[in-house]
Length: 281
Ligand SMILES: C[S@@+](CC[C@H](N)C(=O)[O-])C[C@H]1O[C@@H](n2cnc3c(N)ncnc32)[C@H](O)[C@@H]1O
Image (cartoon, rainbow, N blue to C red; front, side, top):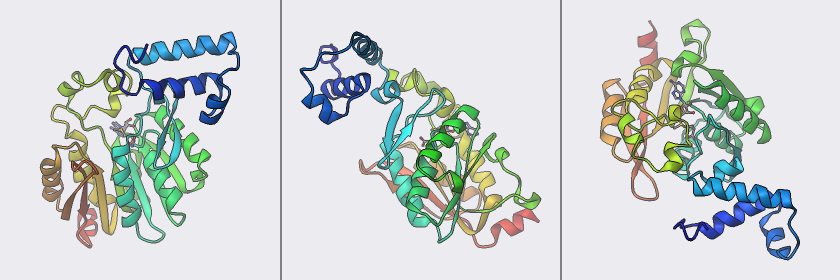
């Protein structure tokens, strides 16, 4: 049915959904193909296939997605982690100083800080999200990957989730974010997999898609330790605009990194040494 409807990965999708419905891994699915199937499992698989035909992704149906080599549980409130975001994780792992403190704004499943902490046993992190249900999923994923003891979760509107450094709050060596960056009007034109099933709060970057970057560029300075950096994921056509926002906020050494498809994907911006001291005075 999926092939007839033109799904490019029909065979793979069907195998993954069948494996999930029957509780079998890929090997068992191949070696036990002549076993009878219980009616409940067959009904479950039929339901999964119907949902896939309706445009829901296999990861959403299964409730799990692999990111940076680790499985992440999904929920209705979380974006499905994208392979594009792995570049941000690569850059963050390299940029974080020994024993460094990381802040992730808009954490969703927690995939970014959890992947970083799993590869940097010396680091600690704080992850925020506006949506408390996303934070519950992030907590579960952090626990599953054994990094919860090094990850604090905070609910709130961007930096509003944190205490200000002048009032007992921490400063960070690295601030990362994959914020919502699609302009409100463009969301309607996206594939059903994204438009109907990824939460709108995770997608909508305001009228020009840049609203979260304005806040992150303007407010990161006061939360960064001296010499700290910001790394943000961007849309393929937002490099110049987002670099401009960080430059206007006083950041230096601003670099745009391309992903494996040659598309601009991550902006890195450096704090001028001592800049936050000036601002917090
Ligand atoms: C594009 S998703 C990224 C999720 C995850 N970091 C990832 O890369 O898969 C953006 C996230 O920002 C959160 N978010 C949206 N508006 C926010 C706000 N005002 N303050 C904090 N988080 C927000 C959304 O709930 C969502 O989890």
